[in-house]
Image 1 (cartoon, rainbow, N blue to C red):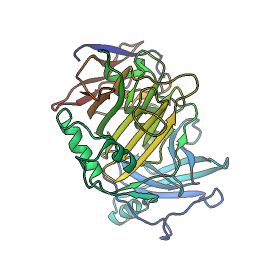
Image 2: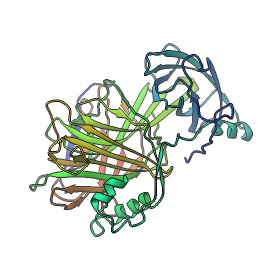
Image 3: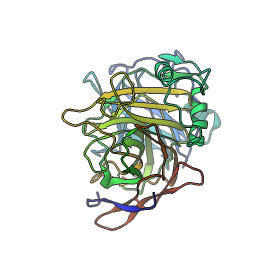
Image 4: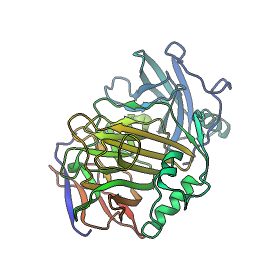
Length: 421
């Protein structure tokens, strides 16, 4: 795969985290209904350092943090226990609006006051507010990773085993992922209404296509990048693997989103999330927590309703594991009405999803390692096989935004950020 092509944005400018097991009252996780959500929150943060902050909100709600008077903001999803986690980089103390809309239809308005401090005890107390994700069930470690059959892996909740010869780096990370117990998150995610990751004009990455291949699985692992914005209102980037979308209007994909919001003189906020999508349906935000610096193992497959890989099976199967935090989420989605993926391409992509609205957040660099599997069982590493490499440009300005290149090891797709807009 040596040909590189332009992917053009056709529009005008528009740390490991300590987890505690208890809430603020020391009584463990609890569901804050709208009437119980505190009207005001106060959090201590250091100056100029991206810091995770736990917010007590209604459970299962879309929450938006914004400067008073703004219509946009930093969106984050709260979990089933009424916790939303954002990362804040404060330049001064001040107050932020926090508005939430729960799945029940109830809404709340809260204020968040940030207090800059260097006091170690106060900062530790802030970190200790972050509560453990509620354990729904546990997937035990796989005792026989190299001999388990495909059916046994699927039944046990494990992703497909990478090829030992063709994908040694991915196999090593897979063994790491399956050889330790993991908390299985079975809480529901949420459809992010109106939000969709874009088709190929907004990508940078490696696309495998041609040679008679029909692809059934795309897999990679990466470290979730920390992102910064350009001081405008909102910036975003998204790293994912998927099937189809290069030359057709359907994509089976999953990955991580990285948002940045500018609070003006107060500083900035970031949110990180894991998602799945059977495009052109709306994106589905999962309850799997991901934070900058976490290693995630992500896989998307075309399957039947039983999870068997089949390009004509009519289902998308998604596997997302946060290896750093031993958390796992699996999701299955039927094909949307009137379209169905067919495995004509496989890709690993860094994308500017909300084209026409937001700038491209500065992710610095990121490396995703993995590849695809076709119907014959042949493995193709990212950067190899028939297909193209894609650079992302801004159409009106001609500015280069994101590039991809082979990394130093087989199967590595190394992305480099070049511009916000």
